[in-house]
Each structure stands twice: as C-alpha cells, then as structure tokens.
Image (cartoon, rainbow, N blue to C red; front, side, top):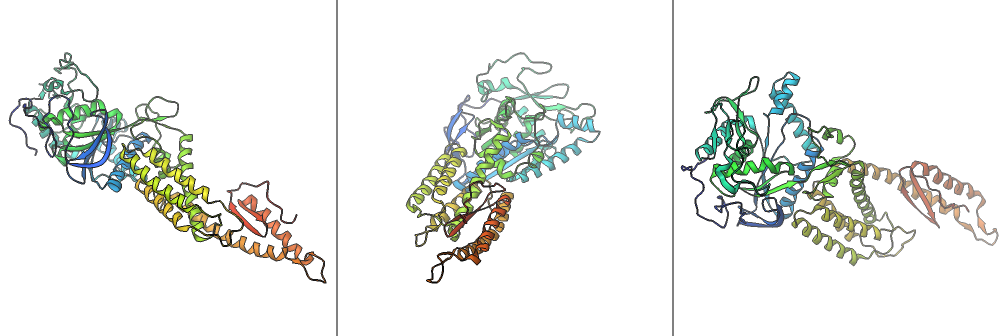
Length: 552
C-alpha cells in the first residue's frame, strides 16, 4: 500500500526547484527540470510543448510507463506504429546512450467495449480479453517489439485501484455519490488542470447528473446488470478508465516517473486525468517528468486516424502477409516519431526499396572484400571520412529528439557513396584494393540498423539474400568455366604454317558460349563479355537488349 498524506488540504506552499526521487512542489502548471542523470538527449516534452534535456532521477536508469491496449478486438497498424516507434526510442536510449529502460504496461482487460463484445458473442468478457491479449502479444513479437519489464492487467489490480481511489478521496480530491459512483473533483486542484489542453476555466461548469462539475471524471463506476463487478467501500462496481494507469504505474514506480508515453490521442483527456489523479494521490506537483506522444497513422488520402471505431484499420496479422517486420520498422524510421504518418503501398515501397538498397550494397561490399568483384582503385581515405561523418551525424540526429529519419538519411548517404566506389571493371590486375574500409562500413550499417531493431542477419530478407548468394556461387563457377572455354576458343593461330585467325575446330565452342549466355538471360542471369574476360549479374528475370556478341 502506498503512503498517503494525513491532511486533505491542497499542497503546501513549500517550493522545491529540483526533482529527484520525490515530487516537485511548484504551484500551477509550471514544469520543473529534474536534476540527476543527464542522458545527453533532448526530447520534445508534451508538458512544456518544447524540447527539454532528458534527465533521469537515477543514473543510467529510466522508469517508463506506456499505455497498453484495450483488448476487445484485433490490434491494427495504428497500434503497431505507436508501439514500434516507442520501441525504437527505447532501443536508442539503451544501446547508444547507456540507459537501462524499465518499462511497464497495463492491459485493459475490463472495459465497456470488452463487455459489449462479450454480450454480442455470448461469452464472458474475460474470454474476449484473454483472446485478444494473447493475440496482441504475438503481434508485438512478430513486429520485434521488446516486451515491457512487466505486463499488468487491470482485473488483477482492482484491490490496488480501490485503495488508490480511497486515498484520493481522503486527500480531498474525489467524492462518492449516493448511487455508488466516484468522481474526481477537478475544482479541488484549481488551475493545475489543463496541462495538455491549454487554458481551462478553473470555475468549470455546472455538473451533469451526479457530477459537481462537467469536467469531473469517473474513478469508480457502479455496477450495472450483466456486468462484472468488484466489491468496494462505495458498493459493487468496476474501475474507471483513467485510474487504472495511475494506480498501476504507481504500484511499479512509486510517486515519481521519468517517462510516460502513448499516442497523441491519449493526451487529453486520458493523460490529463492521469496526471490530475496521480498528483492528487501522491500530494505532489510533478508526477511524471516527461510525456512523449506519437503521431497518428493515417490511411493515405484520409485525415482520420486509423482506429477500430472508425472501421478503417488494417490488422497487424493481415499486414504481415504482404510486408515484413523489417519493412514496417523502416517505414516508421523514415518519419519523426511524433509526426502523423500516411500509410500506403507507395510509402511501404519506399521503405522496402531503402532496405533493398542496403542489402544490395552489403552484398556487393562483401563480394569486393572476397575478391569476387573487380573494381577501379577505391578512394579509401574518402570512404573512411564518410564513415566518420555518418557516425557523427547519426548520433547528433538521435540526440535531437530521436530524429530517426535524419539518421536513416545519413546511413543511406553512406550507402550511396559506397556504391559509387564499387564500379565493376573487366581488368584490375595489380590494382591496390581496400577491403578494410568496406568491412567497417558493412559492420557499422549492420550495427546501427540492429540498434533500430532491424536484424540484417536473421530476417526474411537476409534469408532471401542467402539464397541469392547460393545461386551466385553457382553462377560464378559457371561463368568462370565459360570464360576459360571462351578464352581457349578465341585463341588465334599465329604459326608460320597456319592462316591467321581463329582455329576452325574451336568455333563451335565459341558459339556454345554465346548460346548459354543468351539462354541464361531470360532466367535472370546477365553475362557480359568484355574482351577476353566476362562479368555477370542477377537481373531477376530482366532481359537485356544490348548484350555484346562475342563472335562478331
């Protein structure tokens, strides 16, 4: 049980200008910059509506509460976008800035929507909740989202919620009605209400029904017929929506929280009410130091967010039939986490193409390192410089409100400059080679994408590349053999007793070499004869119309 203040009087006049492990005492809506461990990151804080240094109460540890799903239906891409974006932020903090993130998430497994779905399907609400909770967790794993340190269900914490509500009542900030409902008293906190929605009239308006003020919100709902209920001092009922997050976050992290996150649609009223009731319970003025909100996902051409209620959603399961988790993660990386984002086949094609460019460069770079790709002399010093610039640009971008789109642009620019140096030539005998710099580039790209959650080694795309590599090994051996045969066939007679020119008996070999080159083209293997040597590439079925004819 949490410690409650004995007095029900509004917070005392004592002012503290720093925040460590206890709540701030500054009046009104003033945000107080915490003292403690400076992560080196600046992040947009919805409490101040501007970027602030991300400072943690405990060195190297971030306490993070994330609003979870209400499990009454399939999770969709709108959910996926928010959770993947915050997963990326968590990975960045952990892998690049040395922060251990302790994240908790609540599963709302009792709610009006769950109850109504149960009535529609003639099953218990608990059956509905269990079904879609399991599916949600599987979807998150499919998207490579790191699970929180702990999932907490509302139904398993109702006794904590009842105690939390009782504490708010005793502190003078909530009231019970004779019918058995409990409401938060917004007027009791004066001008402190409205941190996310701007100015709010502290006088409020006359209440509706049993409310004292129209802004008052439900903490406890009295039981209705055919609904699940729990016993409480105010009669049978169940928790309101907002109180569950405050209670469960407090049960895990106490009276102080570093980071709270969720979709932008949750800022008001959900997060507004969370802050009000949490600070009323803990008798403090700054419960959570930072609120991070992700932008909505829209279907291309629509101004409405993707949501179940609007029936305009694509389930995660259906999406993954057409695209991979890596491609969706790249799609999220290409925009600011707090910006709205348009979903379409074209935007997914951009993400897919970006990934394919990375895979192709890494394959070519490794072929060069193995000596299988002959290139002109590489400007090694330039590439080392580009690599150092990329590393610096990526860190600067990520320290500036987790600007992943800028970081990805820097990585793709590195790929571009690497590709410019990997121009194949027919001969490069005696030319100095620079495999080490390409090895460093490949290692860095693999490492930074792994930080973002894109695993290039263990993915569907990687398996496809591995299969391609197997084919390439066969094509390489075939081309080498063909080149040797062709060189033998092209050898000229130069003895005094022979006519100058090709050996007549070897001409069929040359024609056979031409025939196999032409036969392989429709199969996606393009062989180009360059003088006495040959090069090849896989074209995925693309036919070439301008191949050289070696017999001419």
